[in-house]
Figure (tube, rainbow, N blue to C red):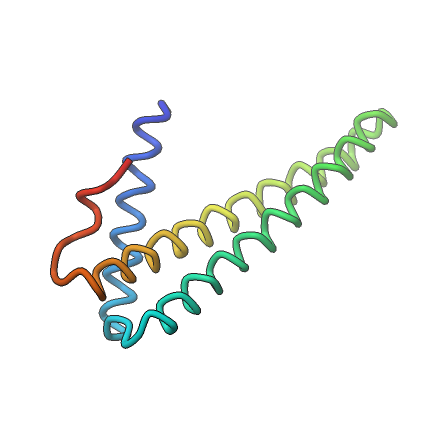
Length: 114
């Protein structure tokens, strides 16, 4: 998949996540609330990124030790954490968009996609 196609798919996921969040919770009532919710999602993404880095370090040690079974286990864990990281990043992006929508009116932040 090309980077552009992946970016488009991620932007669609962000939109879907935002729609689900908006169906469950109203727009942010204050900048502080919006910041806190977005920060929480960023923190969760960072936790997954740290776990991914830890597992990749373990994988590298396994590769250097020529331990294929352990390297395969690490690769499987790396995939789990990478997917979880992507999910958390999508949620953080959706909450950033919700922040914009909460204080910028009904304009859709997705028009500013990169």
